[in-house]
Image (tube, rainbow, N blue to C red; front, side, top):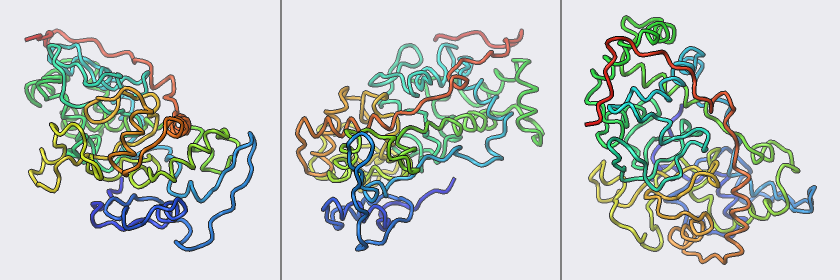
Length: 376
């Protein structure tokens, strides 16, 4: 996966610049947070003509040029071998990776709920709650960093964090994870198949690599992808109006590319201070004052299903979330009607996880030496 350079050094893409120019948004306002998108018509070229499409709506192809269809898989063939993906699917659902043996990756990133638990913050070890909302696992492997504060570079690094976090899965250390996995006889041949060149296949690193391999297959194309690929009838007339308003409002300043986000950091409260200043975001990682209130921009794929919203899970209603973004990030006040229209478009970003991915797999039984649950 290619990582983009920090947004402060990345110029606006031609596709995004065109979309913003058509929307009447000054480029100077957007430069510090320009989005990465594929090549499009050069700024200043004639915009594509709006055409009437099935269903009575109008579609201006130039307005969609800041976005791209989802890739099929979010990793290389070497990262996503069948053996690694299947092992990762098991580990993703295995509660024995937690101290109490009650929490798995799927507990907070529930795949039959579009990769979230629909809680403001998630329940972990001994009923503790984390300090931030759990983002969806769907399509996350394509983001340029992981976690709200970007402290992990990829899903393989991210997979280790919750397992050892005392509030989440609370395993004491990597050695304890490895001892548990090695005590389960059925995992030994699965790790050996997934990592055939490893002298010791059953390691914490390889467990994280397998979970990452599985997450790299969690791609959820939607009707919006069909539209981007040329099917003008894939969106309804109202969804097309929502797309136009989404761009005209300035949302692609941050929410662009195949994931409609997930590719830059941004300050919460760029134009108007964000109400909740308690969590300082990336500053907690870097201790750089320039990073105060800065977070990874979330992707909007499946956003209609993944509430509540924002890093603190403080807003349950998507229309309200859209209005808050317009106000605090763009300095714009949206009417209720305009917010509803944008939300109609956002609904077209809802895909689905194949039933085989959602289903809990059969897990290998514990062995005689497998540790017992420890609720302490």
